[in-house]
Image 1 (tube, rainbow, N blue to C red):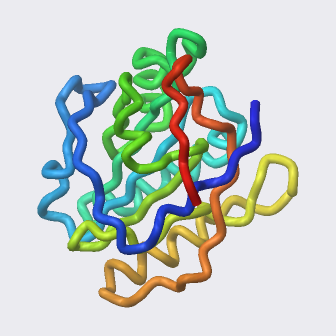
Image 2 (image 1 turned 60 degrees about the vertical axis):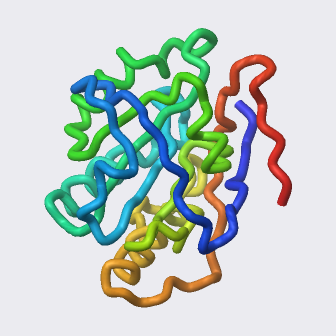
Length: 193
């Protein structure tokens, strides 16, 4: 595990489109899937990362709290499933069912979507407004597996509330911290800050 922080993609960046298979239903999910929703949260997660395991109940709760709301939620896993079979589509499907995710979980086999979003770690969060411009990127909250702080989702939930209310999100945003995305050999992106 390599401890990695979010790239902190510039605020206002337009959400890149994608077409990814959902691991439970097999349906193809794209930006257009969420066209009717006022905001869109894209989360890069995986099955085996201890940082994701630490917050998995809160991720599931977010889905329940915003189900049938103006917030679209999508989780994407982009890890190399050949080297990390726990992050392959079948294991992701089992995780989505076990946690009763109320949002689609997609597998980014080519890793092109993760690159387009400059995702660097799991978990990594990107919240877009109605125009699909980036309004928030960074941490769920201050909790980490070893710091004994409760998992509340406070930072992300505050940003979601602001976007749904049409209000600006604070520009003081802290990067998410987690395991690095497991890139396929020769596929590692080069991100410039």
